[in-house]
Length: 278
Image 1 (cartoon, rainbow, N blue to C red):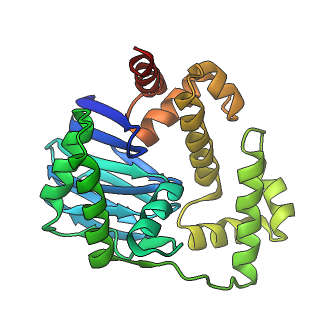
Image 2 (tube, one colour):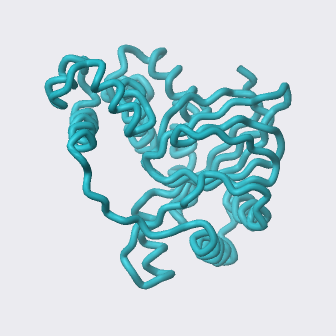
């Protein structure tokens, strides 16, 4: 795996993460996040899938992932990738939307890719201010104007849809995994929860969620691990508390999903705490 340069910064004023990957060739497996991802390609070409649809993305293209949307990507040439993105927690996005619209709504971005978007330079400027730890209010101003424009052009408010019986069964499996992710989970247990046979469960879950039950479990574990690392817990402790068999197993999955090792991710938050108390 080409390591390249990988940087992450947490902005305490905006309460969002900024990622910068430069010169990497890593393949990211099918997974999801509990937060919004808004990013853009600076250089390089990738094949990306989201919700079981494939895209070819290039320099200047914007990328949107809503919470829990499965996605994966890999390079399709021998060139490296330069990529910048923002991670915005659901609660933060809802707060921003309420300030913009005056309504308590949950937004969704309707398409995962916008080719050659005019808003890429604005996103890049905001991203650079976050990575440079700028505290001037221009950063907050740019953030609010950018989110307003992106939602107006590419978003809509989520609608509550009634689930059919199969979707309800899959939802029960998701809730079970969300609750018991730190424990050993067997396919037999999921069958009992869903009241489906093994193959029907695997097929239905993957069709509805766009991700297999096992990959869903690993993604939930990684998302919980991020929270614990952000609190300063050591990788070994995190591995044990999130259901991984050992630290090396945990480290491999974390790096595959997030793009950097758990120890490096933890250090970002430890460094931020030190600076806060200086």
